[in-house]
Amino acid sequence: MSFGAVDLGLLLPAFAAGLLVLASHVLLGGEVLRRGIIFIDLAIAQFAGLGIVVASALGFEVGGWRMQLAAVLAALAGALLLRALERRAPEHLEALIGVGFVTAACTAIVLMSHDPHAGEHLQELLVGQILWSTWGGLWPLALVTGLVLAAWFGLRLKESPLGFYLLFAVTVTASVQVVGVYLVFASLIVPALAAGGRPGWAYAIGGAGYALGLLASALLDLPAGAAIVLALVAVAGSRSVLVGRRR
Image (cartoon, rainbow, N blue to C red; front, top):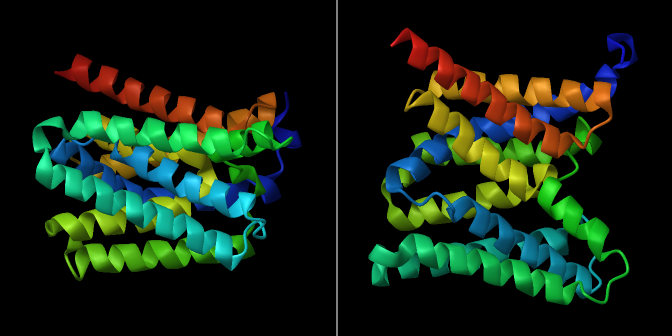
């Protein structure tokens, strides 16, 4: 294990991808916690993933515009479904979100059951491929992040129940293809939860988690997505312990 062996040319684009994800996810995560719909991100991410699986089964080019369109449409359909459920059965919304997640996940597994590369595809969907990020490949994510932030602050879509769901769907669709389902969930919930409604602290926790996770991945040859999730939880837990002791 040597810091001299760390390839910054590989880690810096990945870290930039993480910062782009955090730029929108910290705000969305705070709103998710306020609304009490914790697992909406997992459900929407899984719907987007299902769209990718369907597109792959139809023979669409990996990363092509048709696959991107399929992912966006699937996520938007999931968002509209969850919004309709929120209106019809708000008292059971969290349970229904869980049902939506497991239904989309199992549908994806069934569709991939005859694919010899299914295990690899499923791992990519869940854990992501953040280490494969390149500076040129970050432009789509950067564009979506900029539009989301403009809509969040300029159009104030967070105040519209339907607008929030649609904005959430677009954001998660862009990020899940870079960092995976697990890291999308962790980026949304862990920093916002640990920061206690303070966005500045949430961004600091998220940035530290991504930096430490990527460094641990490079030094110990660990899966980057899983390492970052664990680092985010560790940083958030450390801050909670320190705050508790001060109080």
